[in-house]
Length: 454
Image 1 (tube, rainbow, N blue to C red):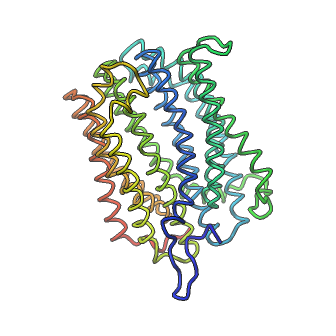
Image 2: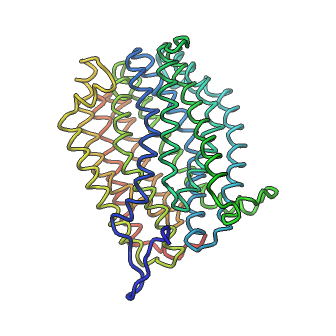
Image 3: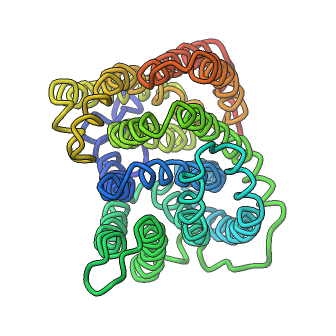
C-alpha cells in the first residue's frame, strides 16, 4: 500500500525512490508555500505602509509564532505516533490521538490566549525599545492572538493527514487559506472594496480569518472523504488521560524544542531592534525570504519524520539511514538551485517586498549569508527530523538545547554587545545548522535509537 515506506520484493524490503518520496513531499511543500503566502503578503503589503508597521509586524508575528510552536510541537509528537500506528496498520488507534489532541489543544489555546492578553503588553514593553514599534506591535497582537483557537486545531488535522500520508489535501487547504488572506489583507490594510483602511490591524484580522477558513475546510473535507470507522474517528469517548500521557511522553519534548528554537529567533529580532528601525526592517524582509527558501527543506524534513516512523512501524529499521540519506540528497539539490537563483538576482527578489532602493541595497549582504545557511540547512534539517521520527524526541530536544546555547551566546555577543550589522548577526544561522548537522550525525551513528517503543 502507498503509505508504507517499503515495497516487498524477492530480496526483502526495498526503499522508495526519489519519485515516491517526492509524491509524499510535494503536497506538503505546496501547503507550506501557500501558508507562507500569509507571511509574504503581510511583509510585502506592510512594507509599502511604513517601516514602523513592517518592524512591528515582525515582532508581533514572532511573539505569536513562539506561542503557536507549543501547539505545533504537540501536533508533531502526535503525528509521529499516528504515523507509527499507520505503519503498523493499527488504523483504529489513529483517530483517538487526533480527537484527544484536538480537545487538549483547544483548552491550551484558551489558556494561552488569556495569558497573552494579560502578559504580552509587559513582555513587549520590556523587549521593544521604540515607542512607535511597541504601540503598533500591540495593535497587531491584540487581534492576532484570536488565531490561537483556529491554528491549534489546524495543526492536528495537518498531523493526521501527514501521519497517514494523505498529504495532497494539505495543498488545497493551504491554497484556500492563502487566497482568503491575500484578498482580505489587501482589502483591510489599504481600505479597498468598501472596507476602512486599517493598516497593521487589518493584517492581523485577515490572518485570523484565513486560519478560520482553513479549519472549516478541514472539517468539511474530513467529514466527506475520510472513513471514520477505519481510523477510529468516531471514538468521541470521555477524555483519556492515559492516551494523553502517552502522546505527551513524545510531544512534550517537541513542544519544548520548537518553543526554544523560536524563542531564540525572537531574541535575535530583539537584538536587531536595538540596532535601529532600519535594521529591523532589513531583518524582517530578509527573514521573509529566508522562510520561503526553507519551505522545501521543511517539507522534506516533515516527510523524513513521518516516513521514518512509518518505516519503523512496518519493520524496516535497517533502512532508516538510507532513507534519510536519499531525502537529504534530494533536499540539497533543490535548495542549491534556489540559492543560485536568489544569489544571482538578490535585488529582484527583494523588490517583491519593498520598493525603497536603500532598504534593498542594505539587505543584499544578509541575502548572501542566508544563502550559505540554506545549503547547510538542506541536509541538517533532514537528519535532525529523522531523530524525532524514530521517537527519540528527548534526544532531539537535548541536541537542540546544546545548539541553541551557542546560538544565544552569539546573538548577545555580536548583536547586543558589539552591535554588529544585520548580515553579521545572520551568520549565526550558518553556525546553527552546522552544529545541528554534526550533532545529528554523531547521534545517529553512535546512539541506540533503533529500539525505541511508542
